[in-house]
Structure formats: C-alpha cells, structure tokens
Image (tube, rainbow, N blue to C red; front, side, top):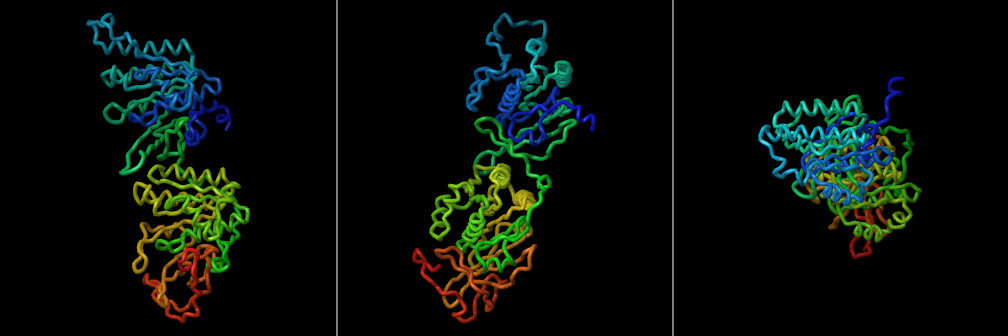
Length: 503
C-alpha cells in the first residue's frame, strides 16, 4: 500500500471517457503507441493530449514528420482549439529537396534517418517538454527500410526519452505490413483506434487498449466519436461497477387495474417488456406509466427510435397525457434516436447520462426493434442489452422496454427473443368478439410478485389507457388467435373516440 501511495499522479489524456477507461490516465514519463488507419482520429487525440497538459502548465511539443504546421492548425481550428500554448516542430523542410542536399556516398535513407533522430533529440533537449507527440512512425519506418534498423532507432528514442522525464505518444498509421508487434513490445502501452463502415449510416469508430503495463484498465472495445472539441469515448458499460442500495417498493402505473395485473405495480430495479403488434397500445401504456412517475415528482428519460418526436408529443396530448410541461420543467428527458447515426456505445452513454446526471428513475426504450437495427448482429444486441438492463436494475431504475411483433393475429413473432432478459412481460393482443376487433392485455410472467393470470380487455381513449375487469371467456390465447366466446355485456362498452375511431 505504501508503494501505491508513492506512485506519481496520472497524466490525464484530456479525452472524454478515455481517462475513465484508464482509471485516471496514463503513467507519466513513459512511451506509448497510438495506432490506427488514416481517419481514425490519431492527430486529434495527440493534440488533445498536449492541450490537456498545457491546461495544467505542462510544456507540450508536437513533432510532425508528415503534416505541415498549417495543416495541424487547420485541424485544431475545426475543434475550436488554439495551438499557441504548444510548440509545433515541422520536420518537412521546404528546401529539403534541393540539389545541395543530394549526396552519393551513402544511401539517402541512412543519412536522413540519422539526421531525423538527431533533430528530434536536439529539439527535446532545447525545449525540455513534459509531453511529446511524434507524428508519425510510418515516416521513420520508411527511412529505416529494415526492421532491425527501425527497432534499433525506436529503442534509442525510448532510452533517450526515459532520461528526459516526458510522456511520449508515438502515432502510427499502420502502413507497415501486418501488426507491428516489435513496436508493441517496446511501448509501455498501446491504444488501437479502428474505423468501420456499416451497410448504411455513419461510420463506426471504436478503440481498445492492447496493453498498458502496471495499470488497471477496462478492456474490450469502446465506441468513440470525433466531435468539435476532440474525441469523445464511450466506455464499455460494466454493470458490476454500479451496485447501489435502493427501495424495491412497488410503484403505480397510473391504472389500478394494470397494477392488479402486475401483482401490485412496477418494481424498481426491474425491466418490464411490453410486447404486441403494431398499433395495439404499447407506447400508450408506457407513456401512462411514465406520467404516473412524473406526477409523483420523479424524473424520467424516454428514448424514441420508432417515430418522430412531434408525433409522439401530439398523440400523447390527444390522449390526455401532455408531456410538454414535464419537458419544460426538466423532469422528462425526451430524446429521438437515429440508429443509423448513433453507435451502440454512444446510446449506452446516453442512458448512463440520463440516470447519473439527469437522475432519471424511469427509463423507456421505444422500441427494441429499431435498436436491433443499429447493432451489427443479434448476438451483440443481446449482450449489450443484458449489460444495460443489469446496470439499470442495480441502479434501482424502472425500465420499460417496447418490442413490436410481426403480424396482427395468428403466428405473431418478434425479431429476437428478449423475454429472458426482462423481469416482467406484458402482452398486448388483438382479439375478435361479436364482429369487432378489440384489445386485450395480460401479464405472462413476473419475477418479483404474484401476478394475475387473467386476461383483461383495455381501450385507448381521451384519458389514456383504460383497463377493464378480467374476462374469463377466452379461447385460443396460446395459439396466437385469441377469441372471445362470452356474452357481449361482459365486454367494455364501445365508444367513439376523439378522431372517429373506437377507443
């Protein structure tokens, strides 16, 4: 323990999310490798690292072997940065290609490599920086022309920097053949940046820590974006890091009948899955449960994938559930998500922010079908959703998930089976009775209470979701074609709704 207390403070990278992954930052006075193909954000990361040091009074030196100072300042301008606190050392002299620089006794690469290394060392000794970025190693690799000379020069640089008390980032565009494992073995830590294209939508960027000696870090892939202001990393969600105590007393959905179906209401720390075909009332049931929480003074977050935000607001208001007052007073965070533009990691980050910063106690995801389309494949969806729901459960959040089913009657199916991830499943179905198409609601399972095993009819009208008494005369529910064979007087009275439809 005493040794840990004497360790030097971490060198914060200044990259949002990356310091969290590294548990505080990098070990100072070490050499690190940041690798990635062109366009992954290496230069932006390097500049952000130096500016983070400058903000705490550390001298920063950016040595560029490929880009010009004008190009670097143009990159910084797009992020709203000023590079005045930094020293930019451009090693691409405009007069370096004249006839007076030509010689024939030695191979040009031997002279150029030696001169380049000496110039780097001289500049570091002159400036004595605390942080250095060298962009990029591909130029040194080309000058070396052989793996042996390249490794020897990198080792020489590592020894040189180890005696100068500075933290160094080497940027590498991976232009060499295959993975440069020699460089991986030399560096104290390696951060790998990747960029992939999906069939549709924006490119996906992610990073992972390949190695980090003597430092605990969060492994695996972490999504990131290049925004104005630099990189923003979304650390992979690890639910086990967020355990906390909370009350598990049931809360009301706003409907006494629906509470009875659920065995008392919604339990904090559980996920409720509402399934059913299109138009049956899944969103209405979720909004009504959320409004009940808002009326209790709680906060909520609604993530909308399926429809436009104005449509949801207008439709909810027409059903007597006006959401705008809660949006205006800050209780409700209402966010429309475009799955083609948002990575799964960014969405997890948005959910975390809603819980930890907005202090939401109810989270609604509408719907899982659209969320599925944002994921590379079904396996990733299930793993990511399992971790997110576990996280929400350990935070004591009431989670409401909507899953649309294909078809109206008969063999109704979903895109993916998420039933095992949820603590409660509420099934909404259409049924036929006396020449009319009606709606029924039932609870298939709950893990936390003894729920009703009946089927209740419900209607959607100007006051939201109205649930009736249990109906006993159903047949064929498990076949997917539930029909009602009882007397008409046991059904809810049909009424003409606000828009001329039966509600």
